Each structure stands twice: as structure tokens, then as C-alpha cells.
Image 1 (cartoon, rainbow, N blue to C red):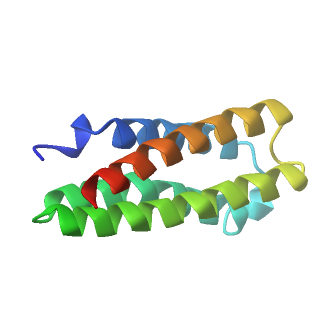
Image 2: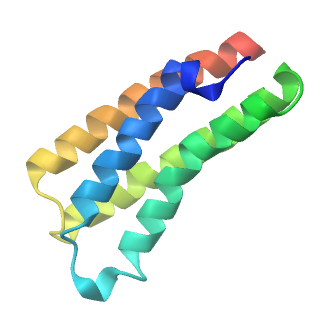
Length: 116
């Protein structure tokens, strides 16, 4: 592959990162090193793993990094649920993030299947 930028999964994962950063900007200051940091690290891991996988040689390695990205996406899904339960996210933000998470999951799942 030429560039990770061309992957629709990467593009939507990047949009998810931006949405999470915006949503977490209003989280309590006391959560900066807690849920906020963990959620941001997990969400950034998704497009980072895609970029790294594209930069490696061969589809086998890309498959591995897509799988790692899907694992990080599961972590994001849980942390968004937790943040909502703690009252840090509105129902609207929760719904928007869950929609993005589902979309990224479908795209990455399809990419992973195409590499098998």
C-alpha cells in the first residue's frame, strides 16, 4: 500500500481520535491522568497501528497491526461506556462516539478479512 492516508479505516479512525479529544476536553481535571489519558491513548493507538502496519512489509504484518488496532478499539468502546456512566459524556456525545466506533470496527474488520 502506498499510504495509510488512503485507507478509509484510517481516515475514520482519525476522525474518531479528533472526536474523543474534543469530548474529553471537558472531563474533570482530576481525570487527566486517569480515564482521560487512558481513553486518549487507546483511541490514538487505532490509527497509529494502521499507519505502522502499512509501513511494514507484506499483508501478513498489516493483518497483525489491524488486529491490534481492533483490540484498542474495544478498549475505547469500554472507556466511552465508563465515561458515560461516570457522567463525563452526554448521551449525545456517547451516541456519536459509539457510531464512530462501530463504523471504524466495520471498516477494520473488513480490511482484516481481506488480508486473510
